[in-house]
Image (tube, rainbow, N blue to C red; front, side, top):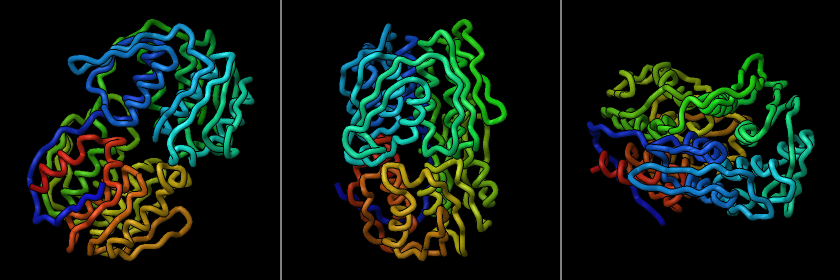
Length: 415
């Protein structure tokens, strides 16, 4: 699917932020072991992959009246094949839960997923007593994996992704004892582990985070049996930037801070860039702004990298976006595809290691290949609103992976 976005004069509107995809993933897998319901969940393609995965593992999921009921798994099934589609979270969480079984499970996915690394997980699995085998290209999906594992003490050096660790924390729901994980260097995506720990605490699995370590403190009574998924800051960021680059105003609702979301840093980042932004409870309002600043550190929020590159392209002057190594292991190599997106739209930009240097001021427009990456597709669409000639996006349908309502929301503000 190719989609063309025309430039607009400006807009004034409001929207409701869509449910958080990554919190929905965690709620699905936690509920598959503990049982419970999920309200206001994301219906993105990635989250649908997670529903199918827990059903393969033995859970029963029913959806009705806007609520998802998840029946707990007694023992995860083994000897099965789980197709995670495009979702790295689904694949890595499924792999971690497979460590509870004594027989192999096969975890696979689409072409993009098969280029996402799992070599970190191989070393971790071996350390905790499981077995992980690569069935095609060494270090990457597809894999075969089995346990069983018990409690352990683990020290980890640098890792490319914390998703497998989050999955192991969730798997601890079925262990009599948990474990300690110590990081020699705090991973860029530590914030996502914080969210996982917070959600586990709500269902009675007590972990503590201190000194770059995660400590298991034992089980307690369950506090909740229903997750209510908050709005997603990384999705809302697209329309915050849309307002800023078109000199517009927007009010975005349903952005709760009850559960930590690393991408909520977008608020602090935009304030540091002199954005006229107002936060009142779960409502965030953006007004026309004259932006400032020349350096933006996105190492702990890699999902914001493509859309912040669009903001930098629209802002006058030179802006350095500091990224992280993890950008190379997303749905595409986002360092390269973000650079290609900007150049395709006539923006002067270059890479220096993991940083993107953008000489902005004008977005001419043109043709962008999303490379099947949902965040590149949506970022290019937002750029089109402030372009001179408009932007056409190849493989635009990738947006459905994380934000199925994106096109509808885009049409509301673009008229």
